[in-house]
Image (cartoon, rainbow, N blue to C red; front, side, top):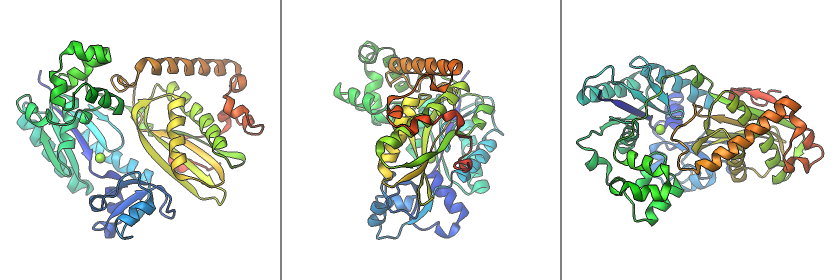
Length: 413
Ligand SMILES: [Mg+2]
């Protein structure tokens, strides 16, 4: 049976939601930032007007303002709002199919094979959904229509904002093959570099590279790359399930004393990340976004987040990514720290294929052994060296800190 798959991507989601809540900023350059009062905060998202000034995600607020003569409207991120709107939009998608698979907060695949009979029907349905998103939510969405998830995702990237792009078995060579190979889902930086070194720059070149060469370069993953580039991916769109209703998992703690050095902050982040990762593994979930919350000694709270390249349930990855966020942003004395993960889903079959899967599996096994040891003998049976270095911090037990599944409950000790 032919498959018809849509991939929908809400355009500039965070900034668009903020404009809904405050229409007076709609025609201005808008940036969603970790904290609007802090010039050293970073831009998490921006609208097209801000983009036209060259403002990028990751710019400091200070840099971003320089780029547009201080005309930038900075809004502090309201993740609750984004989850809420995202949930409503996905509920609407589910009127058409129960196969709605979230990919982060603003993207989803929909398998509409049961409600249309050909590509024309799939395109019409995508257009209907696109118009409903505008009229019912005041948001725009880019939709890709194709016969596999990989090309549907590429399609949604081709025209932005507010457009539908169809990639069929007839037109995919024209539409897809000239695109850089890095546009292909799950081709991360390392894979891209390796391909480029071998003279493979476009998806078309990848598709036409003999399978045995790709296999010799990437092992089993070479086969997957070949499959993706040729539109032969057969992975199913997952059925919407309740697990996705758990929006995030997080832990936070107010430290026994103010933290002054980077090493102390790193140690606390790793304790929290361990307990977040254990809870992810308990629920058989993986995350694709990490968030770091910091409360400074003047009692101001900041949260900043980052989408990671490959979904994970590993403490080492979560703490590493969180620490990167910390380094970017904070130089102050810190009273409380929170680690939270979102973008939760089931085990990603292909997601970590390119990220040295064996190493990841080894790390996962190791962390599960630690889980089991602690389950049996208590948390203190095994500890990180970085934590033991400090007398008072080593008494911290993440099993006693606040567990939240909800960003607003952070720091309410
Ligand atoms: Mg988007």
